[in-house]
Length: 162
Ligand SMILES: Nc1ncnc2c1ncn2[C@@H]1O[C@H](COP(=O)(O)OP(=O)(O)OP(=O)(O)O)[C@@H](O)[C@H]1O
Ligand SMILES: O=C(O)[C@H](O)[C@@H](O)[C@H](O)[C@H](O)CO
Picture (spheres, rainbow, N blue to C red):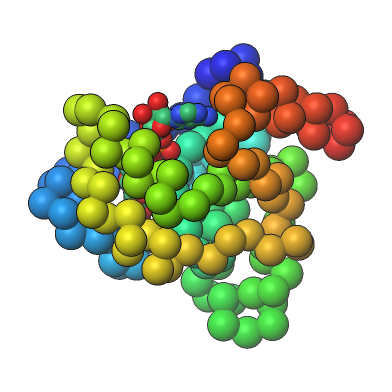
């Protein structure tokens, strides 16, 4: 990646049924996403235990999805009680939340060629989006800025943390 870390593209881990569903213009459900999120959790765990830096890019729209990324299936057991509140961050793992308006993201998707994701699905994603809360270890990044700028801010942020 531009940041110099190994990059995992979340989309590469979708089962074929999910990709076909999105290509047909149908939003994924929580059930569709769960096996995919569990796979991403395995990748994150592998990277954590290897001790190096890495980046994973994916739509982690709901708080529960992000908890699954961090804690795997355990997040499902605890999500509804108070323990769920504490399962929102993990040392050494940061969320980078790229935020922008519906109109800007939609315009970029319409201009993008050769991607299975239909711009028509964006509305359903905004409908389920739960922006990360303070306690989730998230850095908020405005997508109106250039990618160079965004990368610089990420590096600066991580420097301050270490
Ligand atoms: N900072 C930016 N400034 C201007 N255009 C951008 C910027 N970042 C991405 N784009 C453009 O927006 C479009 C979508 O970007 P990209 O494919 O990287 O998004 P993505 O988050 O990976 O999307 P998806 O979640 O659908 O995989 C692309 O055409 C890309 O060139
Ligand atoms: O959870 C989801 O609905 C999917 O992961 C989508 O977000 C797409 O895969 C992605 O946006 C296209 O790149």
